[in-house]
Image 1: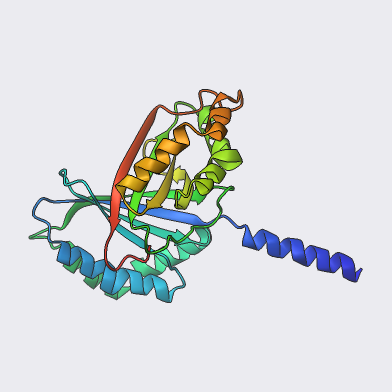
Image 2: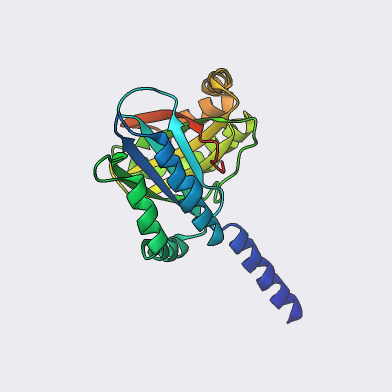
Length: 245
């Protein structure tokens, strides 16, 4: 009986360790005249410290490398699960300090951003938790794959879980997170974030990937054939000085 209890407890602990995280990814579209100082103040002085106090850590804030207009900022917030996300979000919405800080961020007479969009994700089974990159990897690539059908989408997710993520690790891609979008635009789609030392390392690693025998085997597997993709978009990102990723 004691042995059975120990086994049950052990399996329960393994399940907790493998619990899939929940991610919120915000994209802010800035005005040409936007003052980055105001934007940084809100996140550095209010939102990130507030989330940290509530046990939410490893929050990433990034700007695009591209200087194309409109400029965009990205904010990645990892939560243990959707229940914590809902609880924390309600708490912040009801916080008077948030109201004051947000007014300063987006003043009516001189708005900082037009709108921001939020996408919500479940972490992949093959990578249930975010991995914080080391401080040498400060060049990020955010990639989103849109699928032409739910079937193709599911098979592409399986392809990552059953081989692609492991190959990324083998080739030192610096995987940060992989997420299945459960709410947002342009679904069905998945998004993931990679980290490199610089663009040269990124290009070198992708060059190794496309010719790797493991990738050749995966893409020729009947289970994954024609699973990708109706559209692939990417953004090269740099972290803000106060970003926790």
